[in-house]
Image 1 (cartoon, rainbow, N blue to C red):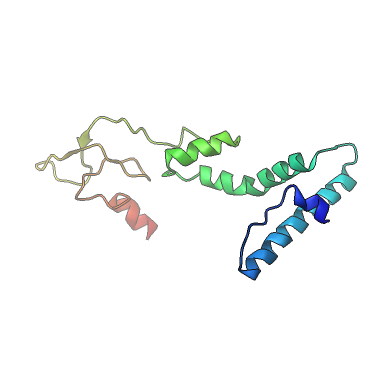
Image 2: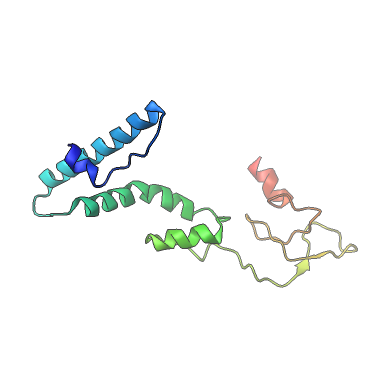
Length: 142
């Protein structure tokens, strides 16, 4: 067991014993998962490194798919998600380079121009009405 975990171990130096126990459990879980995989698929030979990479991708797959649905996800994180092989739907994103327009909630006589949009319904919002969503979407959310 120790020989299998010594090359690819998740353990880090720590003086907190619960963390050390957790790292040991992760190492043992990785070894056990590889043994079960090799018994179920004897024709599919993978090195320990290949197996651990595949295992880690499968474990983070559901979380990455969830993160892709978040509309306000920063571009830096989107590029990292794409790097790991997940796709971010560009159809769900709003146009960021929109021309300025009149605020949807101000009176016509105020005529406030803005480029800010609601993340929910894409209505134009001036700084006075800007919360994180337009007021009508905020009411729907509450």
